[in-house]
Length: 422
Image (tube, rainbow, N blue to C red):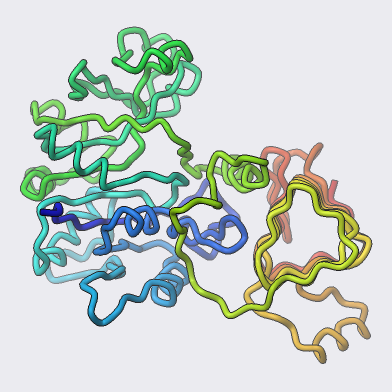
């Protein structure tokens, strides 16, 4: 008999460190890989694992995320599957919004009651990975655990950036510490494979992916008013001597925490064999768009990922991701960049009028040079514009933002002809 699983995707975070990409949208709604949204990753992992009853909890800047989910995930009338939105709400029981990951699940538990389930899979809406959750659930059941936490082995260099769990030889988690400094790491090593030990990856970092037994989840959430899983609920469960198990995952996983990690994750897709493999038997589901194939004229492409519906006349595109409906003019060179594209096409009349007025059109104009940059959706970049973040200091400007030598052109912004940002 198949395990009875309901999945909860946490999609309500503000994502302040990903600003300005999160200025008007929630973090899980940020476009990735040219045609997807971040939230598509955990949902697709669930669907590929055979778990098709999914709630997405939303709160901050949620309009575009809600719209994407509504337009994307539809099931047959003969299926019991669903991807439903549970938006933060004020109720007679309390006038407060979600106050953390655990609090969001606590306030949503009543919506799970009409469904039969034995296990709850709790996921973050802003991570990049491919996991077979069916295997994780099976190991959870076989271990007799009350709670299983997905962990990834990291080195001492990376450990201070994570919550570190210590597991015994039976994969039972016995203690937890939040972002320990280097001098506190000795003694926090866990049993790992000889290969991982040789690499120095002996510390187990929490991935923020949990499987709870139904009764245990209700117990830990109703026992107190703790707001966060990682910082409060999980350490308390370990302290209470509950059987908490580690599921060791050794594949690619990244938490899209800031502009640099977001940029690297996208540019990494252009590698010959990317760590996150889009070209895999497991489908990444997203909104189906009835777009024409991309049209490319006179362009040299090298390690480029091109989404559908683009019109490209550039001279050269290297190590870049080009999103849906992107227009790129003649003589333009793009390298180390993520161009998100557009949500719409301008009509021929709109294009003609803009050119007569010598105004930029949606897309990237002629004879531009763009390097170390993210161009958000629906931007209009004029002719002869140079954008290169390589030597720029951090800063927030009217039309663009600079962080870690990466220029982010803000959504819907216009960069006039002959502008130089470098």
